[in-house]
Image 1: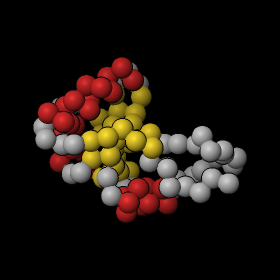
Image 2: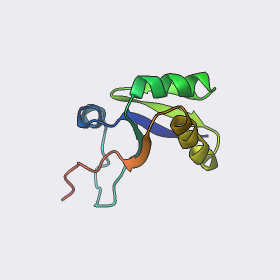
Image 3: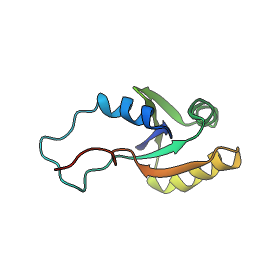
Image 4: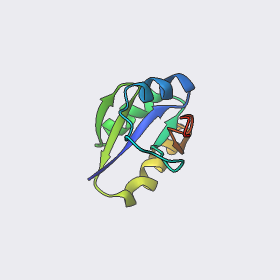
Length: 98
């Protein structure tokens, strides 16, 4: 089993999610949190839940649980086929890493 974060593409949602995150004691520039950013979070969340994915609500987003990382492209296709533009992106790209 694996999971990926689903989050609204706006900066507020990212900040809200990152506020509650416990960062590793030591991290470098390569620290990232991969996620799927969508324009309509609630519609995407409901679609994935209806399609049989396990959806766990998080502060500022939701974890989407699926069996294998090889299923990720199909998950993105499902969102796009239902008119939900999405992007696989680094959610933690705004963290200061010095």
